[in-house]
Amino acid sequence: MWFKDQIADALSGGTVNDAVAYGVEIQPAQVEKGQKYWKVIKVHHLSPVENHGNHNIYVDLLDEDGNRIYGAKVRMTWQNGQGEATIDKPENEPGTNFPLWKHQVGTVEGVGLPSDKVVNLHSGHPDEPGPPAWGNTLFHHSFYVVFQRTIKDDEPSPEDSVIEGTVTNGAGMTIVLSSDGQTMASQVIGADGSYRFANLPAGSFTVAVSGTNVSRTNIRTDGTNVVTVNLTVVTEQPTKPLAFYILLGAPGAPGTRTNFILAQEYALKVGALCGFSVDEATNAKRVLIVGDTSAVSAEDEARLVAAGCQVSRLSGDSYAVERAFADLMAQG
Image (cartoon, rainbow, N blue to C red; front, side, top):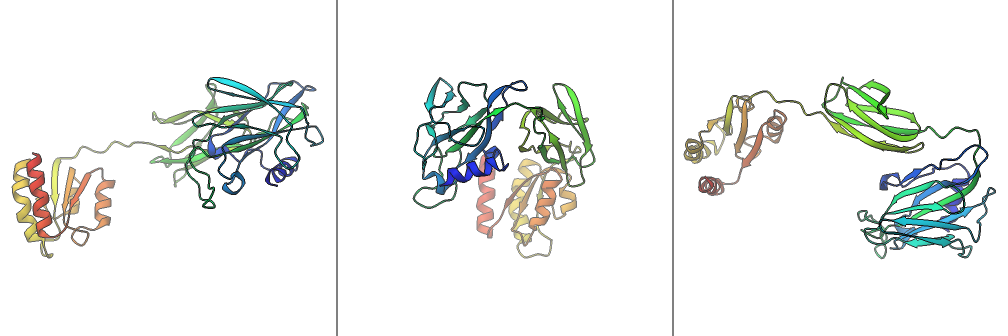
């Protein structure tokens, strides 16, 4: 029975929250030393085989020794309401469950003691591969949450969360981690654009690239999860002296002469420069390639895009190219 395996994993110190990729977070209870509370020891997203096409939140409440507490209650709240359920199912099932309806976003917590909360539980996730009869599909995802009655002790909250990712165009720049307006750490972004902040407690963080307006706020950690945050630094492209360039294949290549003749009327109408040089074309804001990849390679097209050009291509036989230019002429 899948749920018993999840309880055994939780009691042995296994992964606490394997549903991070589904946006599920744990909000720790605010309790003092010596106080009893409901501690989340497991959040599990059911696999297609475990779920059988359902859309439920399954819940168990355990005592200090890991035994199910029959009669204990759990509460679920959502956008416009709340409900309670009692741990009363037979041993071969999870203790209780709530249906998780379409567009419903739920929070689950134990009742009768201060409680950790599991938030952002919903079924609006994409289809996942599985047995053809019951794969997880949109609005058919389920979760299993296990609470254990615990006495708060002196042990500090876990500080094993990680915020990591890449910053496109950010190599060599400095990325700063902050919380509540206070700088927590900073580091130089690697040559491959990567960064990593580890050993983080539960909280809300911001990452920002120094000297730019690039940042991400409200990054939530629970002391155990890994959060991936990818950023992009938009670099200013140099001013390009040419507005429009029609790029043809090499002068001696088959089809170039015909394409040049077909392009002339359109080039005169829009004021474009016709030519055969990729280097020259990189100086244009807009580039129209005439010919297939044997005339102008895909690598050269990628080079133009990387240079900040807006690139399009006309290809096919001479009749297709002629029709395409006729359409462009008609568009004005």
